[in-house]
Length: 301
Image 1 (cartoon, rainbow, N blue to C red):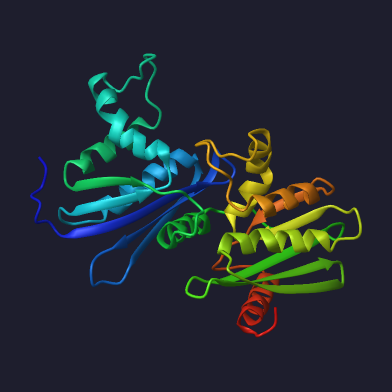
Image 2 (tube, rainbow, N blue to C red):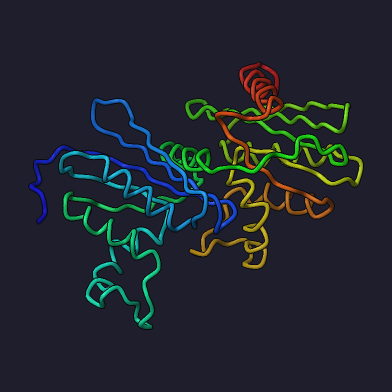
């Protein structure tokens, strides 16, 4: 039964992550109530899939509520949104079978979510991921940080290690980037500042600057907190270039100029990408983040 319309209002942002997929996963959610501080939730699963984490994030957020609410729930997962708004009723009528008469994947989670849908009045919204939406980015960060990571190869003396850090002010649209390159006992630090930019552009710019500075054809370990950068560099760039730099929706790829530069540069190196925790980053990441912040606040360009 649908709750009455005078229910308290709540906004939820949810996200899931898995690395690799399938593999260790994490989920995150941000609950925003009027005149209240944001409530953040997160958790992990050692063996899962990205879609299961997307579902789990929404379930955990809704299940944390002790009373019915009128909710606007934002997700960057089309699988979750379409599943809730288009498919779930059909699956239920077909006894949780698809149109091909196969079992619905993740049925256990869909059944649980279905029961929670009856307790609240929910409007589902899709938001583009990694597009500088503050609360979507926060949910993504919570999910990514929850993923159990394998040990980083920080002691690999046969490779160059590149650590990046960026900072960005939404108010001034000013960003700073920093790169620390380490090979055995040698270190090199680079920083820069950009006006009229975005946080995502700063991550790509840092990668370009770091790779451009390399003079020896050695294996590279690249460390970043940005899954947008890692996923773009390792998969999306190839897909975009084959599709004339258009997204699946037929829109122009954001930051094409920088992605094109990065694609040209990275093909010359053996790159291993590593996502680092924002809460417990390597000491080099902490150092370069501070330098990026200082550069962004300076008067120098």
